[in-house]
Length: 466
Image: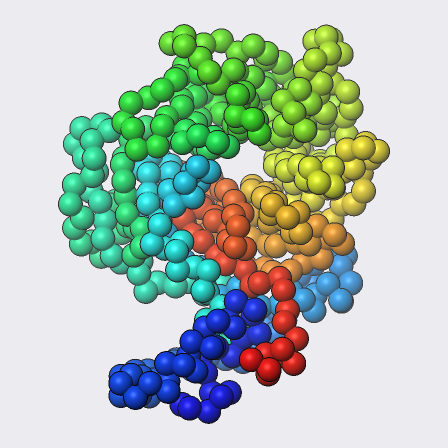
C-alpha cells in the first residue's frame, strides 16, 4: 500500500495527478491506515474479459468504406465505460432538454407526461470517471450498463396536473408504469402533457419549449407550474423539430407537412402568430438550424425534387427565399447540425448516410454510410472535434469531424422492445455536454449518460515523475 506505484489511479489522465498526490499523503497517516487496509483488501472487482477478446468480436466491416487505420481507434479506443441510466420509463422517452442556465436540471418527455429532473448529484461526481477507467477498458462490452442505481426512489405522479411530486416510494417493477429515477437524480415536477415529441432549452434563460404530436407548441419556465406561452395550438401538423436561435429572441418550429415557422419569443399575446412561415420541403421538414444568425437557415427534409437539404435567407423576398439546395439523401434527410467554427453542415438520412457540406463553397465535401438504418439523432460537440449519430435500430456511434473516422460504437444503446406499442424506434435524441458527456434517450424507455474518455493523452514519463 505504501509503494509509490501502488495506487488505485493507474490512468494517465492528467486529472488524476492531484488524486495520486493526495493518496500518497493519506496512506502515510497512521490514523487512517487501519481503515484503508480494511476497505482496500476486502473489495474485489469482478472478473472480465480482455480487450483482445473484445476485439475478436468486433466486425471488421463496422465502417462502410473506411480504411483500417480508422478501425484501430474504434477497436482499441476505450469503450467509454458504462452508461449511467438517469431515468427509466415503462414506455418510450421521446425527447429531453438540458437547462442551459442550470445544467443540473433535465426535462424529459414520455408518452404520458413531462418530467423535470434534478441531476446535480449525478453530474457532480462524473468528472472523476477516470478513476478505474483502466478496468472499464477491459469490461466485457462497450455496451455495458451501470444498473447499480437503476432501482431506487421514484416520484409518483400526482393526481392533479402540475402538482409537486409526493414523497418517493420504492418500486422494483418498472414495467408496471411508474418511472424510475437513478440515484443522484430526483423528479422535481411533472406536467400533464401527452405525446410531446420534441423539446429544446432556451440558450440564456430558464425556459424550454415542447412540441407535440398534435402540433401544439408551448413554452414553460423551469420549476414553475404555469405555462408561459402557447405559440401554436393543437390541430396543426405534428412538430418534427424546434429550436431557439443563439440570442434566444426567436424560435423556429418545423412540422410534418414540410413547413418552418418563426416566432418572436417575447410575446404578450395569448395566441401569437409567426412572423414568417413557408414550406421548405414538399413532404416533410425533419430538422433545421440557424446559420450565424436567425436570417440564414438550413433545413433537412424530403422533397419530390430530391432537394432534401436547403439554405434559406429570410431577409430576401418570399419568392427567392431559397439561396441553395443540395440534392442528396435518397428518401429524405432526417437530421442536421451546423458547425459554426468550420462552417460545415452535417446531415443524416433515412438510408443511414451522413453528408458533410461546406457552407462557404456550397458543395458536398464527403458522404459515407454510418448506419444500416435511418439516422434518427445527431449531435455535435462544442469543440467541433466529433459528432454523434443515433440510428433507428438503436445503435450510437461517435465520429471524428476531421476525417470522419469512427471513434466509438455502442450497439443497441436504445433498442426498441417488443412490449412497446408506440410509434418510434431506436435512439430518439442525442445531446453533447462539457466534460465529454453524451446524453441520449430512446425506445427502450431510458435516459442515459455516457462519459467519453479524455481526449488528452499524458505521456508515461510524466506519470512516472509524479
